[in-house]
Amino acid sequence: MKQKKSSKTPLENLSDFADSFTYFSKITKKLQGAYKELEKKFEDLNLKLEKTNNQLRQSLAEKDRISNYLNNILESINSGVLAVNKDGRITLFNRSAEEILGYRSFEVLGKDYLEILGKGLKIEKTPIHTLKTKALHLNEEKEVSTKSEKKIPLCFSTSLLTDADGNLLGAVETFFDLSRIKRLEDEISRVKTLAALGEMAATVAHEVRNPLGGISGFAAILEKDLKPFDPRQKWVKKIIEGVEILNRIVIDLLNYTKVVKLSPHKVNFIKFLEDTINFFQMDNLSKRGDVFIIKNFKKKVLECQIDPEQFRQVVLNLLRNSVQALPDGGKIEVTAQSSFSNKPEGEVILKIADWGVGMDQKTIKNLFTPFFTTKEGGTGLGLATVKKIVEAHRGKVQIKSELGKGTNVKISFPKAFVL
Image (cartoon, rainbow, N blue to C red; front, side, top):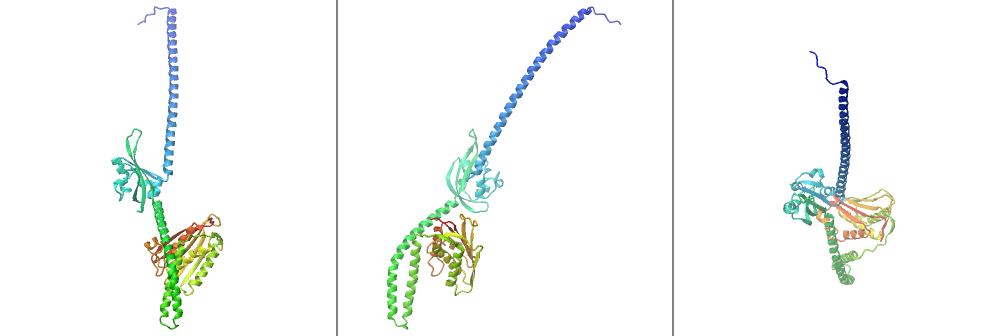
């Protein structure tokens, strides 16, 4: 079947085609314009997104910086800081808390406070009490057990932990170890007691000395009046011996109550010890062949500043105590060394050790208390005097002892001594 021919002429067809092409061009231009506009909006959105991302990154970096800064502060302060959440579980445990209580943070984080740190404590002394009652604690004291089960005194404070909107998150506890402060308080109390004893001793000593002189004088006259073989001579000698003992105690009392006035000068401490030990051996060990003194000196020269006359009393007292601790004989070891080689800012360390009868803890606790003694005929002023002289040299005395195992005395003092 034949198709019908178009009634339009070729010119009319061409005109229609031109119109269509023109219309298509207009549409294309509009689409191109819309695309460019869309492309520009897309670029603007990308720029805004990049800007927002940069701001977010800066905000996160600032947040991390502040967080790290606060963490560094928490880790740097000397007080222990811990936090618990609303369930009473530990969420924060800083470095000082680790050092004071002996636990590592990973051992306690996430654990129940009462199970780890609240053993043996009344709940009123914990941050859990603050969490439940909203009652805060400020600079209160409590005694806690460390990981090694050692009891230590703490000063602690608690407060509530909230967010920016005031919502409760948990509780915070800050604390610090009072052990050193307690020791200082005990030392101050001891010094006050010793000062009072010293004043009393000085008064008693002066009052006793005069009648002692009279008794000694009359006893001497009586001794002269009695014939050599008179049986009463032994009683007179007993009186004289008793007076001498009392006089020695009075002299010790007066020496103890005196303010230690030092005349320090440079000495070779090793030579000083050699001379002092030789004198002691001749004077105290001449009749004992069962006690031996071992001199452990690594160097021949150890220069320092001391008052030789005063410090000789220290060494002689300690050697005498060691000999008395060896009723069946034995050895005494004397060690002298420097903490910082030949540097003038170092310390001299003197150790005198014996392997004798030793002491129990009660005796050790009262060693430096005047008039405390476990020896028959002792005055209880020997070690008190030792401590006094060593402290006058800006030094300290440490004594470790155990019953049946002996005693170790350590004395340390600065090489360069300035009054």
